Image (cartoon, rainbow, N blue to C red; front, side, top):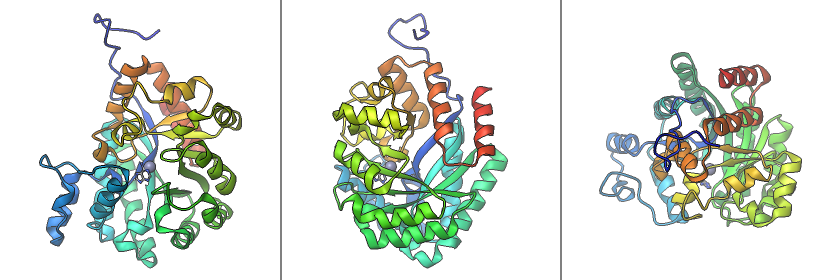
Length: 339
Ligand code: ADE
Ligand code: ZN
């Protein structure tokens, strides 16, 4: 049973300082709108149309969200911009108790997608990550991510960037973007290249596509984690397969609710997936776009499902076990989660 306050209708608040492991965060998607407006002003870029009257990102639906996201990313033009962005994002995550963040890095959005400059951008991001680790105690690892609607050719070039920079910092490869475009088999070559370079693999699937999309990602991309994956719930045989195979889902409930996939947290399948034995982890995806934060997600889930601090601790331990990091880092994370 969940411990409760005197008010019987409100579960005990989840301590915002509860240590958290986040496995699904897009670096550009985590850019606060004020940060992007500041860059736009500096560089005389007119992107006023992507903000509402309150200064928040404005979009109508998922395809429009992707357009707004790409427009915001046009302001990120130099390695220095990425250094500042990485620091701003990690500061926010650390304030929310995040001790480890696996961040999707998209060479396509670095300075207009000139992939020959990828190492310079990566160097800047890594420098910011080191500063954040030293001053805030938060660890970042990068998952290089291709964009599905940019097509398989671009994805192969991005996989080459990933393979060439694979190591202690770049530990994974993934695919994001519009799940309605193309088929996972179009991206097999890119994922094979990344796997051969020793990278761990994840793919966005089962967000806008149904269970077959998840099956296709598993078959053709041979990933060990799925970004979202929540629509697996529409096929219980698949749910059981995910549980048996230990395929872990990077679930982002607030993102799914904000984009209209589910009408509320209470209607979200995360609790049903967990109850049926699937490894689930909790992340924020693109928090300023969805008016969310790690703390807000936890509070909304505690309210929707009566989840207690013990539930969140167990979920974060599972996340640390599923993280694409080296074993000494994992041991350190597990110790911090226990403390
Ligand atoms: N890129 C950033 N956020 C995304 C999402 N929720 N789905 C697919 N691609 C994305
Ligand atoms: Zn995502």
